[in-house]
Amino acid sequence: MSTSPDIAATHDPESKRKIVNRLRRAHGQLAAVIAAVEDEAHCRDVVQQLSAVSKAVDRAGFLVVAGALKECLADEPGDSERVDELEKLFLSLA
Image (cartoon, rainbow, N blue to C red; front, side):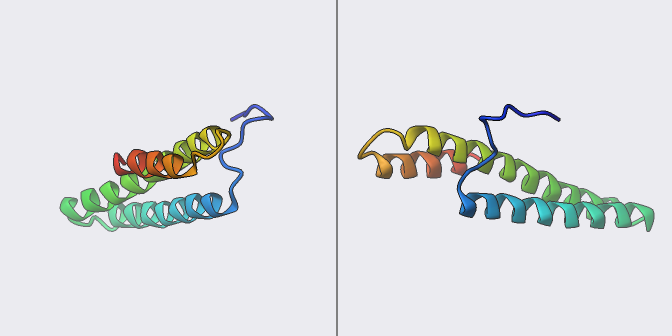
């Protein structure tokens, strides 16, 4: 996967930490799904774990996009409250 050198997932260390933590959680949940399938767990349990993995990955994606929006909008002077409000609104959709 290649990325443009001037576009990063996030420049904010706190946002990066949140994204990485969420992805690590999803990674652990996915390992649990694999183990459950290998151990022939009940389908209900497998589906619940898959749902958790999906939500964690989706949420990480929304955090990446929200961070990018925040960086783009932060260039507008005196609008930090509006930027924070937009970020919260966007993340509520996740």
